[in-house]
Image (tube, rainbow, N blue to C red; front, top):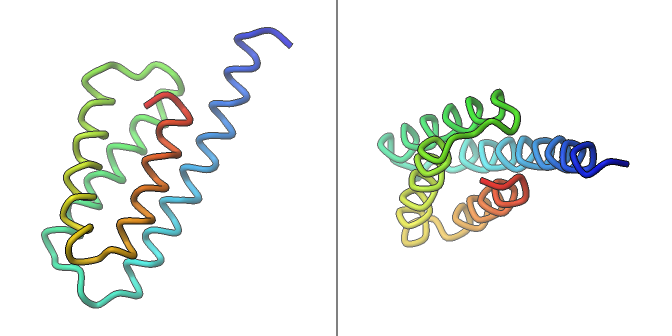
Length: 102
């Protein structure tokens, strides 16, 4: 298997894992009544940004990646204090992003 093909396979596997982690996070948030509307909006924006990155399939620009990672860090900091259980799920999303090079 060529290096490019191997990277492509890893990217697709990473995308699948990322999609699963985002779905898990959304499920956990939907079961929590304590998340304020501002944080929910930040999560929606982050999810949309991640979706746009996944559509680019490996053609992610530095600015795009920085927007997503910055948004994730902001949300993680907000959730750590008020929703530690959700911050664990956000950390898993961050790990999945890192596995595809974002």
